[in-house]
Image 1: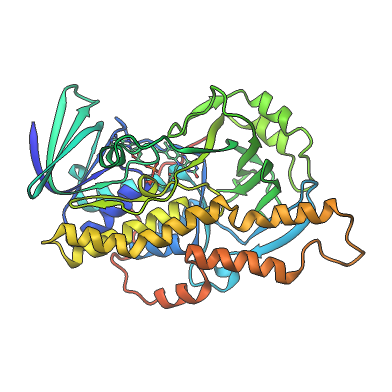
Image 2: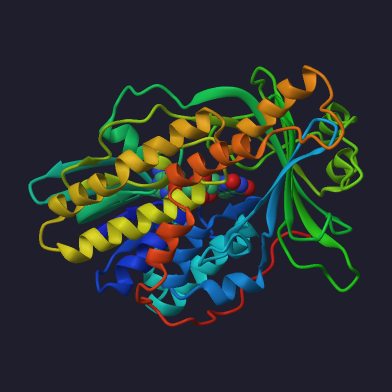
Length: 437
Ligand SMILES: Cc1cc2nc3c(=O)[nH]c(=O)nc-3n(C[C@H](O)[C@H](O)[C@H](O)COP(=O)(O)OP(=O)(O)OC[C@H]3O[C@@H](n4cnc5c(N)ncnc54)[C@H](O)[C@@H]3O)c2cc1C
């Protein structure tokens, strides 16, 4: 079977769905082809930085997202033994025009998915289509999919194809045959969600430890009636990748007890990390990987966005926000030049490539988490004198401001964007189911 669509988006994750919403809102029809047979809420916690929230606000989703997320007040960087190095106010608490949100990825994904169906109908997305190959001929791209729902093969012919198919992108592999697999950092991230008493003020994210051994903790939902709050935890540990991790497989369960043992000493007065790990329904593992930045995401009528274009370490919590910036940029460029998709895709690349690649490299250099290393070195050299901070205000400002500038969420640039017109009024799509326990 073959069908013609103006634009096919391969991958219905965060980048793919946000691009579809942005294209439709600007009057450009498109269809999303997603490999999963069913669209169900997957993943654990994720952070949306203010620049990502801005894109979602323009798509009319801020109100719905606010109901299923926590507005992050601050990130606290803490030493191996839990001492406060720096409390970094976030989003509106830092005077920015948009909040930072901590959210279950499944909730974010569901909000995008429901909005796409409610606004543009069930045909806007075709689940169960896994891209196998693509061929470029003249003014068309012919994409061939395995039909995982009905069996057999489906062909979609498009004027343009956007690869939003994540870190193991098949679209990227077609554009760059022979490219090596994603590059490991030597760190495995164990991840899970646990109900617990609110940590600190119930709106704070904590990053405690050093690069090779740290805990990242944040609440992703407002407290329940019984006072418990869903806390996302990521326990990162340096080790050679064993058989229990695979880039691209975000749902690989591992033995909770073994991970809790590894973090047995991370018991702080604000959170008991081994207890959080033990009380999680499931513990997932994922290798911290990225790819070397490349100098082209576009080849004529085919473009890459999100993790397919620039997978990055989740240091600095920027993966989904950079994907959302891509989604906005490509939708704007296509809407500005719908008759000439190669030119539109080239304009998108000019707008985003350098900026996103810089974030990949900044994250590889540990981004704002450099503070952890600097503090660890400082403490190893001896205890600070009474009243002396672990790190000076100048050191902290230099690290945090440099990262904000690189990632594009410093206050001034967000203020300048705050007056942009909304593409869609703030509406509540059908209620997002709450995944998890
Ligand atoms: C199941 C899942 C769980 C995740 N959980 C977390 C998490 O807990 N925390 C976190 O920080 N990040 C998580 N991520 C990654 C995070 O969503 C991304 O890093 C970020 O949001 C950028 O989004 P993206 O749309 O570029 O990629 P992704 O969100 O990874 O989306 C890629 C999409 O493409 C689809 N796809 C892949 N190959 C094909 C193909 N050949 N044909 C058609 N479709 C294809 C995938 O099924 C997926 O829906 C998860 C990703 C996935 C897919």
